[in-house]
Length: 109
Length: 115
Image (cartoon, rainbow over all chains, first blue to last red; front, side, top):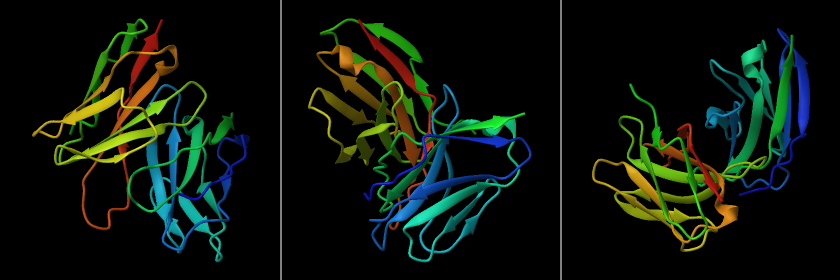
């Protein structure tokens, strides 16, 4: 799996959009970009994934650059419950996920 | 609809002992993966079971073994425990299909402390 690089931590004001960046410059053409999050003391939760096109679901939007070397996860209206560690993962879809240390997102009231 | 359930939630063992952790997958799922998460780190893949066989394995020693039962539930066994085995052990389930794109459902984990 391609290596991903994320900022260690970020803050976002409650109600604003949280934009979490991820670099994956060595990603292969058939590797997906996955995002998971882990709220304290819970198991990771799947958020969204994509290959080439931008994706949106009820939780978030995923914007992948045209060269696929980076992506951004967008939480449109952050709430306090979105405080968590967010993991960006490049994977071929074989479910052997390689988690890094992620971005610790703190939503500020 | 029950999600992924794991037991026990917490346990304490001493070095050299053996431990068995259990996992019931989400209803309708047939594939179980196990991950180890040390404090302050992201989860690390141990292995995956499908059709009662180990399909994939991460970089873990043979002290880590597993089993999947006909009802798709799974066990993780760790022998000869070391202090470094202290971690949160996570079980994740999914439904296998060709071209599977890997959305995993995780349990809350079993926290193992080795003294």
